[in-house]
Image (cartoon, rainbow, N blue to C red; front, side, top):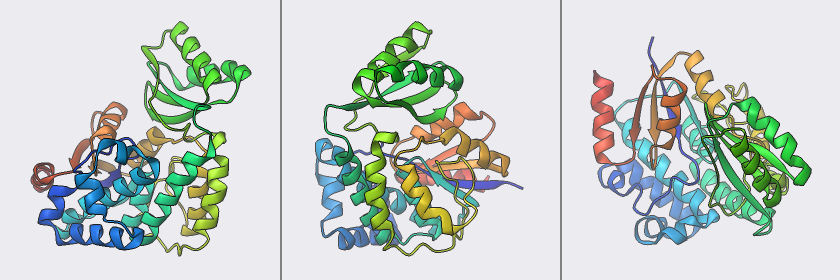
Length: 311
Protein backbone atom coordinates (compact mmCIF):
# COMPACT_ATOMS: atom_id res chain seq x y z
CA UNK A 1 0.00 0.00 0.00
CA UNK A 2 1.30 3.45 -0.96
CA UNK A 3 2.61 5.60 1.88
CA UNK A 4 3.39 9.32 1.98
CA UNK A 5 6.14 11.17 3.87
CA UNK A 6 6.08 14.91 4.44
CA UNK A 7 9.68 16.17 4.63
CA UNK A 8 10.91 19.62 5.56
CA UNK A 9 14.01 21.62 4.54
CA UNK A 10 16.73 23.04 6.73
CA UNK A 11 18.75 26.21 6.93
CA UNK A 12 19.93 27.56 3.59
CA UNK A 13 16.60 27.05 1.80
CA UNK A 14 15.26 30.47 2.81
CA UNK A 15 14.33 33.27 0.42
CA UNK A 16 12.42 36.53 0.72
CA UNK A 17 8.72 35.95 0.06
CA UNK A 18 8.61 32.27 1.02
CA UNK A 19 5.12 31.23 2.06
CA UNK A 20 3.45 34.41 0.77
CA UNK A 21 1.24 32.77 -1.88
CA UNK A 22 0.15 29.93 0.41
CA UNK A 23 -1.00 32.35 3.13
CA UNK A 24 -3.24 34.01 0.54
CA UNK A 25 -5.24 30.83 -0.10
CA UNK A 26 -5.12 28.97 3.22
CA UNK A 27 -6.70 30.14 6.46
CA UNK A 28 -4.55 27.64 8.35
CA UNK A 29 -1.36 28.97 6.78
CA UNK A 30 -2.29 32.55 7.60
CA UNK A 31 -3.00 31.51 11.19
CA UNK A 32 0.49 29.96 11.46
CA UNK A 33 2.04 33.34 10.59
CA UNK A 34 -0.16 35.00 13.23
CA UNK A 35 0.93 32.48 15.84
CA UNK A 36 4.60 32.96 14.94
CA UNK A 37 4.29 36.73 15.34
CA UNK A 38 2.58 36.30 18.72
CA UNK A 39 5.17 33.81 19.94
CA UNK A 40 8.20 35.87 18.88
CA UNK A 41 6.83 39.36 19.46
CA UNK A 42 7.77 40.46 15.94
CA UNK A 43 5.96 40.86 12.63
CA UNK A 44 6.94 37.57 10.98
CA UNK A 45 5.09 38.39 7.75
CA UNK A 46 7.16 41.55 7.39
CA UNK A 47 10.39 39.65 8.08
CA UNK A 48 9.62 36.97 5.48
CA UNK A 49 7.91 39.05 2.82
CA UNK A 50 9.50 42.52 3.04
CA UNK A 51 13.03 42.12 4.43
CA UNK A 52 16.19 41.17 2.52
CA UNK A 53 18.50 38.22 2.07
CA UNK A 54 20.92 39.55 4.67
CA UNK A 55 18.22 39.72 7.36
CA UNK A 56 17.06 36.18 6.60
CA UNK A 57 20.66 34.90 6.68
CA UNK A 58 21.02 35.82 10.37
CA UNK A 59 20.70 32.39 11.97
CA UNK A 60 18.29 33.37 14.73
CA UNK A 61 16.00 34.83 12.02
CA UNK A 62 16.57 32.05 9.49
CA UNK A 63 15.45 29.21 11.69
CA UNK A 64 12.04 30.56 12.83
CA UNK A 65 11.45 31.94 9.33
CA UNK A 66 11.92 28.57 7.61
CA UNK A 67 9.95 26.76 10.30
CA UNK A 68 7.03 29.19 9.91
CA UNK A 69 7.02 29.03 6.11
CA UNK A 70 7.29 25.23 6.14
CA UNK A 71 4.51 24.60 8.64
CA UNK A 72 2.33 27.15 6.82
CA UNK A 73 2.89 25.40 3.48
CA UNK A 74 1.71 22.12 5.03
CA UNK A 75 -1.68 23.57 5.98
CA UNK A 76 -3.41 23.47 2.56
CA UNK A 77 -2.42 19.81 2.20
CA UNK A 78 -3.96 19.06 5.58
CA UNK A 79 -7.05 21.09 4.64
CA UNK A 80 -7.32 19.03 1.43
CA UNK A 81 -7.38 15.82 3.50
CA UNK A 82 -3.89 14.67 2.49
CA UNK A 83 -2.27 12.84 5.37
CA UNK A 84 1.33 11.83 6.00
CA UNK A 85 2.19 8.32 7.14
CA UNK A 86 5.65 9.48 8.22
CA UNK A 87 7.47 12.78 8.53
CA UNK A 88 11.00 14.06 8.87
CA UNK A 89 13.25 16.99 8.10
CA UNK A 90 16.85 17.95 7.52
CA UNK A 91 18.38 19.51 10.63
CA UNK A 92 16.11 22.48 11.41
CA UNK A 93 13.42 20.75 9.32
CA UNK A 94 13.08 18.11 12.01
CA UNK A 95 11.32 20.72 14.16
CA UNK A 96 8.72 21.24 11.40
CA UNK A 97 8.29 17.46 11.35
CA UNK A 98 7.65 17.42 15.10
CA UNK A 99 5.05 20.17 14.77
CA UNK A 100 3.30 18.16 12.07
CA UNK A 101 3.49 14.99 14.15
CA UNK A 102 1.85 16.72 17.12
CA UNK A 103 4.80 16.14 19.45
CA UNK A 104 5.71 19.85 19.76
CA UNK A 105 3.29 22.78 19.75
CA UNK A 106 4.06 25.24 16.93
CA UNK A 107 4.46 28.27 19.22
CA UNK A 108 6.91 26.33 21.41
CA UNK A 109 8.80 25.17 18.30
CA UNK A 110 9.18 28.64 16.78
CA UNK A 111 10.48 30.03 20.08
CA UNK A 112 12.83 27.07 20.43
CA UNK A 113 14.40 27.39 17.00
CA UNK A 114 15.01 31.10 17.44
CA UNK A 115 17.01 30.27 20.56
CA UNK A 116 18.59 27.31 18.76
CA UNK A 117 19.82 29.62 15.99
CA UNK A 118 21.22 32.09 18.52
CA UNK A 119 23.00 29.41 20.53
CA UNK A 120 24.46 27.73 17.43
CA UNK A 121 25.84 31.04 16.20
CA UNK A 122 27.32 31.91 19.61
CA UNK A 123 28.96 28.51 20.16
CA UNK A 124 31.93 29.15 17.89
CA UNK A 125 33.66 32.57 17.52
CA UNK A 126 33.41 33.97 14.00
CA UNK A 127 36.42 33.15 11.90
CA UNK A 128 37.38 29.95 13.73
CA UNK A 129 35.08 27.38 12.13
CA UNK A 130 33.72 26.57 8.70
CA UNK A 131 32.14 23.84 6.55
CA UNK A 132 32.96 22.20 3.22
CA UNK A 133 31.07 20.04 0.75
CA UNK A 134 32.77 16.94 -0.64
CA UNK A 135 31.23 15.57 -3.83
CA UNK A 136 31.96 12.27 -5.55
CA UNK A 137 33.59 10.28 -2.74
CA UNK A 138 32.22 7.42 -0.63
CA UNK A 139 31.27 7.73 3.02
CA UNK A 140 34.30 5.59 3.92
CA UNK A 141 36.64 7.85 1.92
CA UNK A 142 35.34 10.97 3.62
CA UNK A 143 35.61 9.50 7.11
CA UNK A 144 39.21 8.51 6.32
CA UNK A 145 39.90 12.09 5.17
CA UNK A 146 38.54 13.40 8.47
CA UNK A 147 40.81 11.03 10.38
CA UNK A 148 43.89 12.24 8.50
CA UNK A 149 43.00 15.95 8.62
CA UNK A 150 42.17 15.80 12.36
CA UNK A 151 45.90 16.26 12.98
CA UNK A 152 45.25 19.93 12.11
CA UNK A 153 42.20 20.39 14.35
CA UNK A 154 38.58 19.35 14.63
CA UNK A 155 37.09 18.10 11.36
CA UNK A 156 34.00 15.89 11.26
CA UNK A 157 31.36 14.68 8.83
CA UNK A 158 28.32 16.90 9.45
CA UNK A 159 25.77 15.97 6.76
CA UNK A 160 25.34 12.71 4.87
CA UNK A 161 22.93 14.16 2.30
CA UNK A 162 22.90 11.54 -0.44
CA UNK A 163 25.35 9.19 -2.18
CA UNK A 164 28.42 11.21 -3.16
CA UNK A 165 27.49 14.35 -1.22
CA UNK A 166 28.84 14.76 2.29
CA UNK A 167 29.42 17.99 4.20
CA UNK A 168 32.26 18.49 6.71
CA UNK A 169 32.37 20.88 9.67
CA UNK A 170 35.12 21.94 12.02
CA UNK A 171 38.05 24.27 12.54
CA UNK A 172 39.30 26.23 9.53
CA UNK A 173 42.81 24.75 9.24
CA UNK A 174 41.53 21.19 9.51
CA UNK A 175 38.72 21.79 7.00
CA UNK A 176 41.16 23.34 4.53
CA UNK A 177 43.41 20.30 4.88
CA UNK A 178 40.45 17.98 4.36
CA UNK A 179 39.48 19.83 1.16
CA UNK A 180 43.05 19.45 -0.13
CA UNK A 181 43.12 15.71 0.66
CA UNK A 182 39.68 15.19 -0.91
CA UNK A 183 40.85 16.85 -4.12
CA UNK A 184 43.94 14.64 -4.18
CA UNK A 185 41.72 11.56 -3.64
CA UNK A 186 39.74 12.43 -6.76
CA UNK A 187 36.66 14.20 -5.37
CA UNK A 188 34.50 15.64 -8.15
CA UNK A 189 34.37 18.84 -6.11
CA UNK A 190 35.66 19.84 -2.69
CA UNK A 191 34.69 23.37 -1.70
CA UNK A 192 34.29 25.60 1.32
CA UNK A 193 30.74 26.72 2.07
CA UNK A 194 29.63 30.26 2.87
CA UNK A 195 28.30 29.58 6.36
CA UNK A 196 28.38 31.50 9.61
CA UNK A 197 29.28 28.54 11.85
CA UNK A 198 30.44 24.89 11.68
CA UNK A 199 27.06 23.25 12.26
CA UNK A 200 26.56 19.63 13.36
CA UNK A 201 29.98 18.96 14.79
CA UNK A 202 31.37 18.66 18.32
CA UNK A 203 32.21 22.38 18.42
CA UNK A 204 28.46 22.97 18.78
CA UNK A 205 28.08 20.99 22.04
CA UNK A 206 27.75 24.21 24.11
CA UNK A 207 24.74 25.15 21.96
CA UNK A 208 23.14 21.80 22.69
CA UNK A 209 23.64 22.31 26.42
CA UNK A 210 21.91 25.70 26.29
CA UNK A 211 19.13 24.26 24.15
CA UNK A 212 18.65 21.55 26.77
CA UNK A 213 17.59 24.21 29.28
CA UNK A 214 15.02 25.57 26.83
CA UNK A 215 13.65 22.10 26.08
CA UNK A 216 13.09 21.48 29.80
CA UNK A 217 10.18 23.93 29.70
CA UNK A 218 8.58 22.42 26.57
CA UNK A 219 5.84 19.81 26.80
CA UNK A 220 6.69 16.95 24.43
CA UNK A 221 3.64 14.88 23.51
CA UNK A 222 3.10 11.48 21.94
CA UNK A 223 3.62 11.57 18.16
CA UNK A 224 0.47 11.21 16.03
CA UNK A 225 2.67 10.67 12.96
CA UNK A 226 6.00 8.78 13.22
CA UNK A 227 9.11 10.94 12.82
CA UNK A 228 12.53 9.89 11.48
CA UNK A 229 15.41 11.53 13.30
CA UNK A 230 18.67 12.86 11.86
CA UNK A 231 20.71 11.54 14.80
CA UNK A 232 20.08 7.84 14.13
CA UNK A 233 18.46 7.83 10.70
CA UNK A 234 15.66 5.73 12.25
CA UNK A 235 12.03 6.22 13.28
CA UNK A 236 11.78 7.64 16.81
CA UNK A 237 10.45 4.91 19.07
CA UNK A 238 9.10 7.05 21.91
CA UNK A 239 8.32 10.69 22.58
CA UNK A 240 10.33 10.30 25.78
CA UNK A 241 13.62 10.47 23.86
CA UNK A 242 12.73 13.44 21.60
CA UNK A 243 14.40 16.03 23.87
CA UNK A 244 17.63 14.04 24.01
CA UNK A 245 17.62 13.61 20.22
CA UNK A 246 17.08 17.34 19.61
CA UNK A 247 19.92 18.23 21.99
CA UNK A 248 22.29 15.76 20.32
CA UNK A 249 21.18 16.82 16.83
CA UNK A 250 22.96 20.19 17.22
CA UNK A 251 26.42 18.60 17.43
CA UNK A 252 25.90 15.23 15.71
CA UNK A 253 25.97 14.53 11.96
CA UNK A 254 22.72 14.72 9.98
CA UNK A 255 22.06 11.23 8.60
CA UNK A 256 19.64 12.37 5.91
CA UNK A 257 20.42 9.60 3.44
CA UNK A 258 19.76 7.07 6.21
CA UNK A 259 16.46 8.80 7.07
CA UNK A 260 15.24 8.52 3.47
CA UNK A 261 16.27 4.86 3.20
CA UNK A 262 14.46 4.12 6.48
CA UNK A 263 11.27 5.74 5.16
CA UNK A 264 11.47 3.71 1.94
CA UNK A 265 12.01 0.51 3.98
CA UNK A 266 8.83 1.42 5.87
CA UNK A 267 6.83 1.53 2.64
CA UNK A 268 7.05 5.22 1.70
CA UNK A 269 6.92 5.64 -2.08
CA UNK A 270 5.80 9.29 -2.22
CA UNK A 271 7.81 12.12 -0.68
CA UNK A 272 6.40 15.65 -0.46
CA UNK A 273 8.98 18.33 0.32
CA UNK A 274 7.13 21.12 2.11
CA UNK A 275 8.57 24.62 2.48
CA UNK A 276 11.11 26.73 0.60
CA UNK A 277 13.18 25.19 -2.19
CA UNK A 278 13.69 21.72 -3.63
CA UNK A 279 17.01 20.73 -2.08
CA UNK A 280 15.60 17.63 -0.38
CA UNK A 281 13.82 16.59 -3.57
CA UNK A 282 17.18 16.49 -5.32
CA UNK A 283 18.75 14.42 -2.52
CA UNK A 284 15.85 11.96 -2.49
CA UNK A 285 16.03 11.37 -6.25
CA UNK A 286 19.75 10.61 -5.93
CA UNK A 287 19.05 8.15 -3.11
CA UNK A 288 16.27 6.32 -4.95
CA UNK A 289 15.10 7.02 -8.50
CA UNK A 290 11.97 4.86 -8.15
CA UNK A 291 10.06 6.93 -5.58
CA UNK A 292 7.75 9.79 -6.45
CA UNK A 293 8.96 13.21 -5.28
CA UNK A 294 6.63 16.22 -5.09
CA UNK A 295 6.91 19.62 -3.40
CA UNK A 296 4.77 22.42 -1.98
CA UNK A 297 6.15 25.95 -1.65
CA UNK A 298 3.70 28.10 -3.67
CA UNK A 299 0.31 27.84 -5.34
CA UNK A 300 1.58 26.24 -8.54
CA UNK A 301 3.50 23.49 -6.75
CA UNK A 302 0.58 22.94 -4.38
CA UNK A 303 -1.84 22.46 -7.28
CA UNK A 304 0.60 20.15 -9.06
CA UNK A 305 1.05 18.04 -5.96
CA UNK A 306 -2.67 17.72 -5.26
CA UNK A 307 -3.30 16.79 -8.91
CA UNK A 308 -0.51 14.18 -8.85
CA UNK A 309 -1.88 12.59 -5.67
CA UNK A 310 -5.29 12.16 -7.29
CA UNK A 311 -3.79 10.06 -10.11
